[in-house]
Length: 116
Image: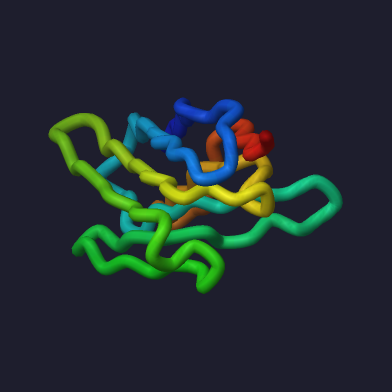
């Protein structure tokens, strides 16, 4: 099984920045696409950004130009990042790290709150 652990959430003012990190361990060689999803209160979980093992990226329209997803494939660990700039209150939610390794894996989630 793949283990995913997120970090980096918190409270930030509108216009601020945060960087989320996800560490993937165990059976990392089977991982292809990784992604960040988020779930706002009372809403369904939605895709924020994804990145393939080859580095191709995809973003939700709502975050294009503000968020950047990146990935570092180390020997025994894969690191996934989400740099979030110009944050808006509507970016508030729980952010989940996702990995597709023939089976879908999810992290435990990290809370992001954008408020003045």
